[in-house]
Image (cartoon, rainbow, N blue to C red; front, side, top):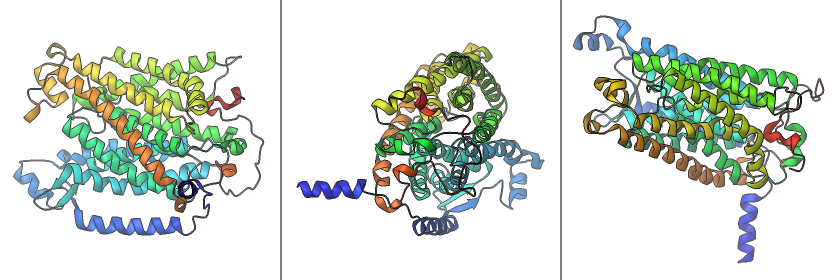
Length: 474
């Protein structure tokens, strides 16, 4: 029995194969060929992108091409697309020896993820059972980007510690889990979550944290010298922050109802983001002896207001309510980097490279519950009768649902997303422990082969992740 346990432990926890010369090309080629085959079998253009659009216009008495959904949604799609590939990519360039991996692997997993997402979300949401086909349009592309965002959030907890092959596995299972939990929350529970506080951020955050916990490396201190930033890497990371900050109103409003809902979502997100910047700067300055700012806080906690506003963005939360949300989340997120992250690593053995618990998981959970409270307190006086029906989709089999019941389901949806993230992440983490996926050695994490073998300049600003340098006992 003892020998069996020892073999089992060696199989899952033995030395990693750091050479991915065979496994990475094999995964990329095989999975891309699989996408081509599956797209050929299932994916078709929807009626607004098909060449039969002229016939559709006549049938529905549509007089102008401007009524095609493309012209309503494509500007938002562009903004969301920039967030996924530029915003998230450059946000992960803070590590002084891992900027290529931060941007490059983000590019890789997002490109695979959006293809798999079109299939998974199509099977759950838009599959035509009479033809067996999935019909896609511009809104499908936005939803696919949303789906990728959950996996990119999870990547933040694993940055520099896993191989690109492992990241592809994380994306494959992450997209699948996302599609299932999204279907449960949005279709079965009939929750409203336009900006994805629950479905995207809470799920992606806890999914990444659970994987990181299972993949805990007790000897990660051997790479401590690489787990830091230099001046130019922090500047590049700020590019990602600013792209995300500027386009977050589009992210939260991209798939809301045309008209007042989309307009209101953009305004609410805009105000929450602005408020979170000031409180982040205030707390960051207060935490330093001479009042200097910590770039970790500025790069991350300034975005917390947009995360927390995701669910309630299209609700009548009021402009000052949006400011309150941003105010509180800026404080909570910054305190998370100061106190929660060191606690998680020291006592719970959870190594969170980018601090996604403080930017995505915790604000996403809070955003879900904020949405539940705002939904439960909605009144006909504030929304109007038609406004309530439009905002919460009280139609069909949900036409008799009350706002109190809706609030309860919103809270339940938040719990579902957290459960899917934690349980799914733990299972995927066990799969990733298999040695065939490869991965960096403990003393070589946060490092990649770069053109210059040595640093061109000495480190100027050490990356303060988990406040490592202020807690030497860790």
